[in-house]
Amino acid sequence: MLYYQLQMDIFWTSMLGYLHAFAVASANGITAEQFLPYASATLSSLPTFVKFYTPRLDAGKHPGEVDRLAMGVANVEHVVHTTEDAGIDIALPSAVLDIFKRGVEMGHAGDSFISLIEIFMKSSDVRS
Image (cartoon, rainbow, N blue to C red; front, side, top):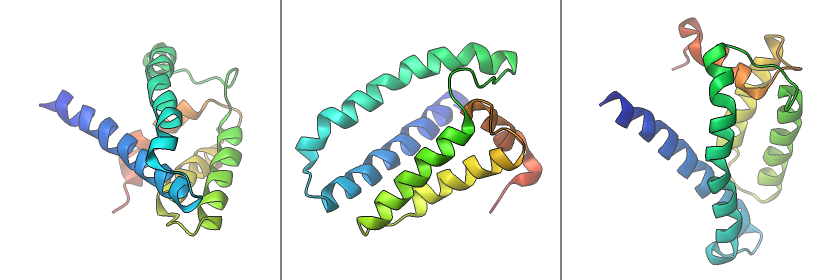
């Protein structure tokens, strides 16, 4: 049962990202059919990233030699601005940006985005 819930965690957060991105696309005159190859390309790239980061997560290492959290902050800020400019609800990318910024505040700006695992693992930071 736990593995099912873990899979649902990935599924629903991924699908929300897809729906949100489509809302921005639609606000810019892009149909779901036109967006499909781009969404599919991004989603189909995820297994490669998961495979790459898995040994780093198991080792508890998150060096910034491939990606840096500070880079991710800048990228997600662009997503928030693009979303806002399109007149679409910014709650989802803003939540992502908040998590990224918390990682930077913890001193991980130069580390990989997987350093955010430290935020998720801190039960005292649970927000309701």
